[in-house]
Length: 399
Ligand SMILES: *Cc1c(COP(=O)(O)O)cnc(C)c1O
Image (cartoon, rainbow, N blue to C red; front, side, top):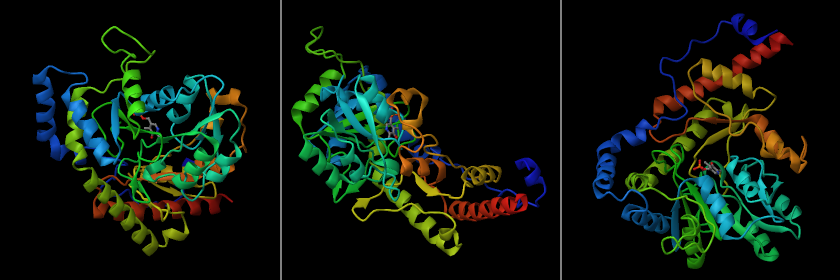
């Protein structure tokens, strides 16, 4: 029986009167409208649109926020990853260990520099790199590891640092989703040789377009990153390195600086939303029907995503039913990187990374953004339960 026939044969609960979006940026940006426009206006008036004083001010503020010595602005989180690898001389013949359960840029940066991404499987409880699996794929050609702090929770940095130290490897944090997160009281961004941040609008600190930043405690590396992000040019028209054009512009920096002051408040709201979902799901009995995301004891999670698992092959049907009921959700990420067509030459196949493949088949991210209301969290809980019941009923009728 096809799905629409199945659906029409059931008296279904009407959609809620108030749909809940996966993300509503207007709730964080709207109240700051005047303040952000004033900051942008000051850049307009200054005439210094690229690498102006606002960029240096934001770099200082982000370095302080992440408790690191240096921060260097760049054009995006993807560029930050490429610049970090360039600064560490990663290239042809080098292998870099990355998760496969992440956004594409983590691995494409490695490939773009002529190096080989080597995928390691994840810990199913946290969705982050499993240090054991990382240790297993280290070879004499391995040059670096890029742990991703996925969904706002730090990877297991102590064992990863031990592996890196023991084998003489660089550690690059992909902290694009985790500004403000902590692992054992040290913020994300302070654990690797270099860390990469993104200020893409949907990240926890989101700009008004593309923007990114790198952090490091090594002043020499910071200088090299700064040089690489500006054509390797210093002084003007003298090029000591072959760099790229990846500068952070002043308008983004000015707006992001206004938003940085609210980041902790927003992170707390995300944490409260997660705690509230946990209570509500338990009260509704949903905690035995879906798998809730875990916050590991060593981590302060900032919940860029609240990602549940729906097993039994029901995930896509539940997502469709949620959409019909006006509840936004998303699948991060439906196709693991090791199974992407562009990485076929690397020789991975289905079954290569079982925990990653299971996650890709089961995950579903629900609304968690700051400003999500009590009523909306209740609506998401109720509609998720109703959607699961509907899909289960349809399946048993079809059987
Ligand atoms: C968003 C993201 C990036 C890329 O950042 P952009 O600013 O969009 O280029 C890289 N890695 C991860 C894990 C991300 O979530």
